[in-house]
Image (cartoon, rainbow, N blue to C red; front, side):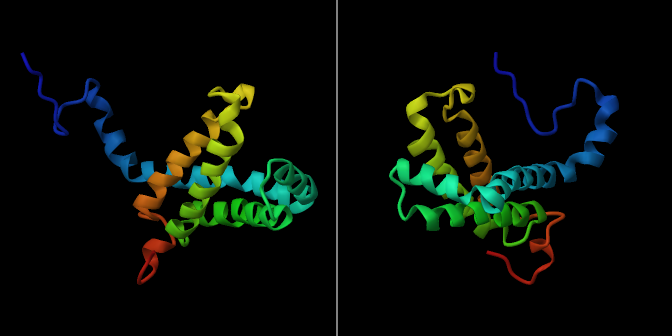
Amino acid sequence: MVIKVSRSSKRIFSFLDPIYDLLEPLAYPIIRFTAGVMMIPHGYGKVFGGIEGTSKFFASAGLEPALILAWYVGLLELIGGAFVALGLLTRLMSAQLVGLLAVATFYIHLPSGFMWVKGGYEYPLFWMLVMIAITIKGGEKFSIDNNLAKEF
C-alpha cells in the first residue's frame, strides 16, 4: 500500500490553516533576517576590540596574512551579516559567508568532532548550510534586493 502525500494534503489541525496562510510569506524572511543578525555579534567583537586576538588565533591556526584576514572576517561578519539581514546584496554577502563558514567548519572545528559544546563543527556547519540556502534563494520578499532593478 502506497500513501500519497501532496502539497494539497489537509493539515491535521485545519483550524490553524488561516494562521499558516497568513504567516507563510514571512517564513523565509525570518530565516534570512535571523541568519544575518546571528553573524553581527561575531564581527562586532572582532572589529571593536578583538582584531589583535583574532589575528593571533588565525596566525596560530596557519591562516595568513592573519591581520588582513582578521579584518576581512570581522567586517564580513559585521557588515555582511547586516546586509543579509536587510536583504541587500544578499547573494554576494551570503556567498562570502559560506566561504568563511566553510573554513570555520572544515579547517578550524572539524578536528574537535561534531558536538558544538566540545568545540566541534556542528554550529558552523549548520550556519554554512543556511547561508548556502540564502545564497541560492537571494533576498526574496521583504528585502532591499527585491526593490532593486537587478540583483546578484
